[in-house]
Amino acid sequence: MIHQYKNNGYNIVMDINSGAIHVVDDLVYEVIAHLDRQEDAGSVHTQLDARYPASDVEEALQECEELKKAGQLFTEDIYREPILDFKKRQTVVKALCLHIAHDCNLACQYCFAEEGEYHGRRALMSFEVGKKALDFLIANSGSRRNLEVDFFGGEPLMNWQVVKDLVAYGREQEKLHDKNFRFTLTTNGVLLDDEVMEFCNREMANVVLSIDGRKEVHDKMRPFRRGKGSYDLIVPKFQKFADSRGQEKYYVRGTFTRNNLDFASDVLHLADLGFRQISVEPVVADEKEEYALREEDVPVICEEYDKLAKEMIRREKEGNGFQFFHFMIDLTGGPCVYKRLSGCGSGTEYLAVTPWGDLYPCHQFVGNEAFLMGNVDEGITREDIRDDFKCCNVYAKEKCRNCFARFYCSGGCAANSYNFHGSIYDAYDIGCELQRKRVECAIMIKAALADEIEKEEEIK
View (spheres, rainbow, N blue to C red):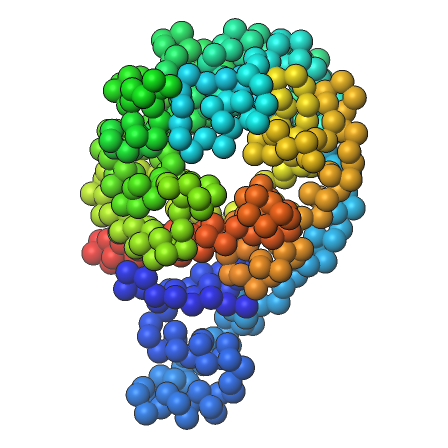
């Protein structure tokens, strides 16, 4: 299976099953298209010899044959059987999302957590519940040494002392059980101060800073409960924090909606503020919401991704580049095959914990009791839910089987699938279209920067 496309003057051919990427000239691009339709060499010559020298067509055919023999073009799918074996493996938990606070000091319009309440009541996680969660993680992690705990909300800084106490407890336990905790934190920045920054720089492997972009965009969607915007308060704090971490091990994370389909301007605004690790992601919301993305918005959004990709190339060449989360793609190694096939591990390797200790497949399922898997006292009591998520992979989803991006998105978000189609085995259609576009842009950026390096070496 291959995928061909043109972007920013580059002819790109992806061999889906091997992961090989080829940037080719017009002739080879056309030859590959004919071969993909199962045409033989004679037919290719018949159709192309009128426009290209026959010797060039033959050379292109030979190059394609060599790539096939090298396992870089028209390769077979070797992953279907391994995923069947993966389903049989013993499940270990390697990451928890601790809902340290079901409460928030902002009133973000698009918040899936309903200002931190998650379809339920406001609450703060106690130290005792948090301890039990870490104990559960250790007990269910098997021989895995590296474990991850994300402090999430609501707004985690509203329960800051418990965050600190749980980190201290985790550091004690990792020595006793030969484990290594990687702690992370997501914050809106309202309560961020020097003490929090210093602690995070010492203990948090990554920190997510929530900001949507330009002041007018951010303040419209992320105000305080009485309507005042939060941009002016958080931006100086975030700038200071990012610099204190050496512009690494953090990212500013925003959401774009139908109100700002020109979101590339928001990404570039964040870059101009000095941030080097940026993620601005499409809102996922019911179409009834005025800010929700609609199918007719997709072409405009795709144009914005193209615009952003070209500007990122320009800035990188000028020495002023930045990372955009959705354009980060590893073409040399990439994630392991099981990760590529089964995704984020929600419901199996990754679980969310409510303030009172209930276990859910991930933070986006919290509050939906159909997905309540157990609690930190009794452990997993609904193994059928876990097994259902364990079987959820790109081969179990009809929409994923023939999608060129399946090994990059790993089937997409199970919660989005469920919310739009009532099944974790479906896919959120707008999300799929945007993911495919992002993959294409990410690979084009790699091609453009590699081309620039090659030109510089030729000059030398």
